[in-house]
Length: 435
Ligand code: AMX
Image (tube, rainbow, N blue to C red):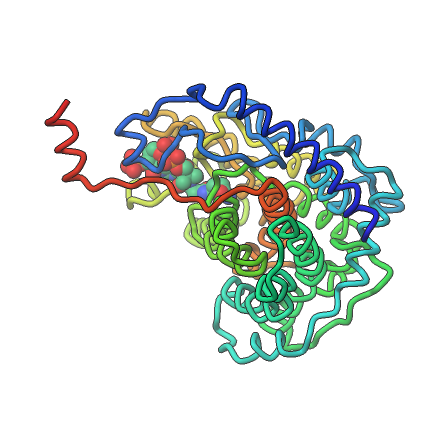
């Protein structure tokens, strides 16, 4: 661990010095203007955050440290006999800002394997919840129970120097990431498999072991988990889960507290819960139409019905993206390679043909194209992972890689408490009257 910590520290020192220079020279330059509408409408388009790990382009989609998803699929190391990127490699890239070698990735995998033991009280906390509890609630409770292990909180109480915050955040992050697959798999087996738990395989990579502990040992399912964990990891800093983790961390809440807060945001249906909503919506459509192979005409009628009843079409639209999400495309490619004839996957592709023109015709939706969540569930169902309430937990395990790599950077760069200004409508009226 010292090896990557030392490397990280050297990079963070250079970055800190650069930022200091930038602010000295250009600190008073305006980066944008804020309209009253933006203040009332979810702060869309306001630049107000620094997130080093990834950057989202409205047309092109996400770049992780400058690399697109197709590039990552080419450049990141894969498992032996595999062709999908290992998420440990993406974590290294987001943290270090440079592509890892095979040895770097093996090193991260080994660090995570060594730290993966989950203390019993975490399982006890999860077991104390009724079996009907949503898996995301169980997951956040598990993360909160693990917070007893935070070295950030212990060291802070002992009077840690602020120069060492990054170091404690680093330690917490690696332990937390190492343990999340076990917590997720435990919840899956508890809720859906009669608590018949499967022990970790200490030889497997992080995502492969998650698949194994959930009870899926098919080679291509492990490959899917590696791809899934890679593409869901980060989507720059303004989305609800990343922004919340960053915000809560800015109060010097430790990485466990900050990540748990972020995951409560991921559990909302307009954000990460959309992956369960998509499959639920498709299953309900199949039931209503009485077929598992609906035509595009039938899908179009069902979409209209969804819209008329005042609901959103899950998996479509985005607050920043204005084209098909490359994370959707990466999953479509996986589907074409591994299950081209799967009926549900083909339905997802038919929905892709049908929905955008309908949403476009409404005139108010800024992005009629599919996002990551439009595809992920159908791939999981193909392998027998049909319990769609669990899907957001998988998203959450992956999202830890991005938001926690960012949190280490937040502490390394000495970012302060986040505290934007708010207004009341009365104060806005007075401001307008005085103009
Ligand atoms: N179906 C129906 N209506 C939609 C829609 C959709 N998929 N996407 C947007 N709209 C509506 C909005 O509800 C809004 O309606 P209103 O003016 O009556 O309130 C209008 O179109 C304008 O919205 P927008 O500016 O295009 O989108 P936004 O930035 O406000 O919201 C998002 C973005 C993702 C919340 C929205 O597109 C949505 O609700 N999509 C469905 C849920 C979903 O797939 N979420 C997952 C996003 C990805 C992720 O975080 N995992």
